[in-house]
Amino acid sequence: MEQQQTAPDSTMDTHVLHRSAGHLSERYAGIFAPEMVERYVFESYATLGRTAKVRTYLATISVRFADDRLHALAQSMGSIAKEHPQVLFVCVQNAGRSQMAAALLSTVSGGKVEVRSAGSLPAGEIHPLAMDVMKERGIDLADAFPKPLTDDVVRAADYVITMGCGDTCPIYPGKQYLDWDVADPENVSLEDARAILSDIETRVHALWERIKTT
Amino acid sequence: MEQQQTAPDSTMDTHVLHRSAGHLSERYAGIFAPEMVERYVFESYATLGRTAKVRTYLATISVRFADDRLHALAQSMGSIAKEHPQVLFVCVQNAGRSQMAAALLSTVSGGKVEVRSAGSLPAGEIHPLAMDVMKERGIDLADAFPKPLTDDVVRAADYVITMGCGDTCPIYPGKQYLDWDVADPENVSLEDARAILSDIETRVHALWERIKTT
Image 1: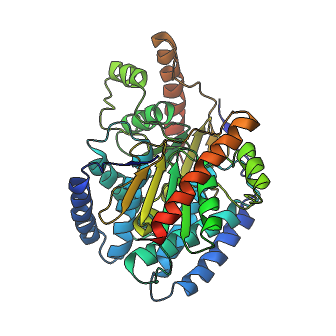
Image 2 (image 1 turned 30 degrees about the vertical axis):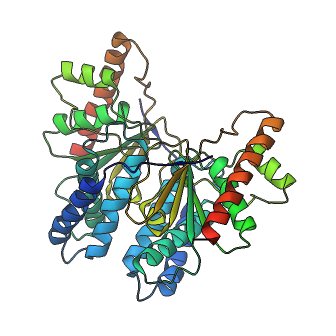
């Protein structure tokens, strides 16, 4: 009637998470208590684990995600200085549009904007077609991964740009909320994916002009 | 080219979350720092907000979710005593199977088991059919809501029972992991939904017998 499940060998993952939580605790000493850093690391792992397709690098990716979230939170609290304006792109899957926009703005601004991206229902991996057309632009998304929208990254943002994800964002005062009507590159032709990239690129350039002059 | 989005009036929600975080901080004083409690409340809101269909009670539900997660975490740390064995049911949407199993075990055990449920890809609301067949059994799921699987509730669990969600659970030593092969009550006939409930009920009774004698 019921099967005893064989536990996957996650001892290694748990080890990596514990050790990394220790390192991050040192990095955020005086800002966050070690217990909270550990929570961030393990909850990030549980969160990404619900959807991530490839599990080989799950622990490593989770630590990067936790680190970025803690960094964003520390910035929103004023404990770490914001050196640049902060932009958050949000779409549904964080596998196409928001990833493309984030990478493009980062490139276009020459790193003068701190860019993040997230999704309301993160996919298991980046859309292959999105990776392909970005590669044609000379931008590699190999290190990118779909992430859920969290409170900390919204707090850190000066600009929140949503694409097709409705009102999934917590709304905070003092931020600029923009909604872009951009098509979804999932299951489209290569030609259409290029057109979508081109649309996003135009918007990103305009956004960068706007940010520069603010 | 881009629309300035009208920010929904979430001032009330933010107010409720802040006030509730204050109350929870008092409840968990000496166990968790207020900053961590506040994080749990706001991240729970962001998490449920990504998927919740009805947004009227989002703040209230998020506070309940945060409270339960903090309670589970405190239990896993030994800071709050576990009065009863802890069982966690996990399915994909936390809208049918795991909700039914959780409510049934809670009833069958007469409250002698602390039961939780979660989903790897939580739905926007409980399946209406699941609510209907449970009501036929005299169990009301009106207060239930789909929740994502988090690290804290896995840590607290003595038994983790998965149904159709694969290896999305973080695996920890010292727990019993069981996998139940139960059909999904989404988009089935009323007759089939009753059969699924009956299947789950038989398993729940057997589980309760097992827990009692352990």
